[in-house]
Length: 171
Image (cartoon, rainbow, N blue to C red; front, side):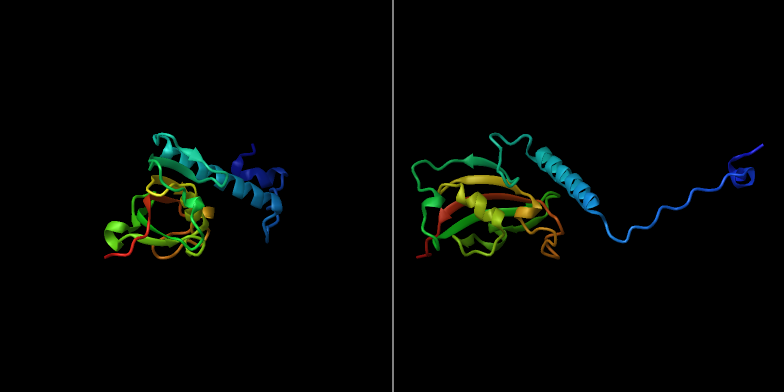
């Protein structure tokens, strides 16, 4: 009688181990990135499902207007180099605050020159002066694969809440 422990003694040979992969194939990388993109999209959708009027940009940013400022100038119409004042709160999805205007004061944002990631420029460019908005920035539009240690982990989705105004020097 051949049992599981006696397979080799019954004339059957064990299957050879598959050859080790030293480098992932192109198909492996494509599958990995596809799965990662689906996971990120699902996480962002779950966090924004109750946001009224949420839209998704072509780059994957989820954006919702909280309050529209009527009769004011679109940020996109301002000359490059204009300085904006952002009353902001940037957090991670777990609720940890990265920065906020209550902690650090309003953020000065120079159009076309600020070193914030591209996603911030994208959402601010869609606003009107005085608008309040909230958004989720996927890692590719925020601090990317590397994050900004120790405050921003790798591949972090960034939650943004902000009001956008033109900078005015204090009197």
